[in-house]
Length: 129
Image (tube, rainbow, N blue to C red; front, side, top):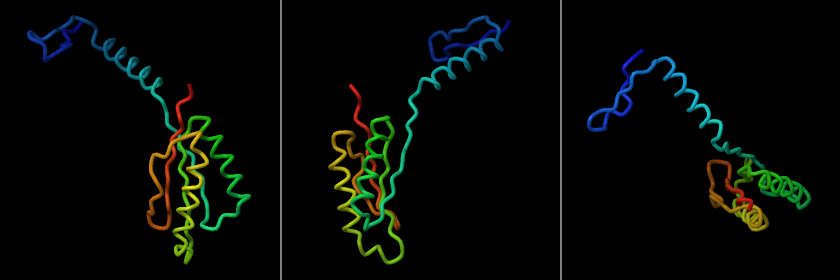
């Protein structure tokens, strides 16, 4: 048996006589249980080109809807290859159009922002009631 200080900031400090190894084991067990109950956020990515065709756009939008309904965050980005960086406006229009069409399923966390050769936008799922 060991004398274990439970609450050192209390006046007077609180101590218990317990088996220290058992105390550590139970503390780890509690932390593990809390960790397993924590929500895990999954991020799904959808990649577009600046001149993505309408059919490809609709196909990817359908997948985006499925991801948001499953409760995953969505990271939609337009990847600019080579000289296609001159079509920045087209990429931004494409992402804003996607955000507008997915309004019923999720809300925009971050508006389209250019980072290097990618224009990235995040959409979080709406809470299911």
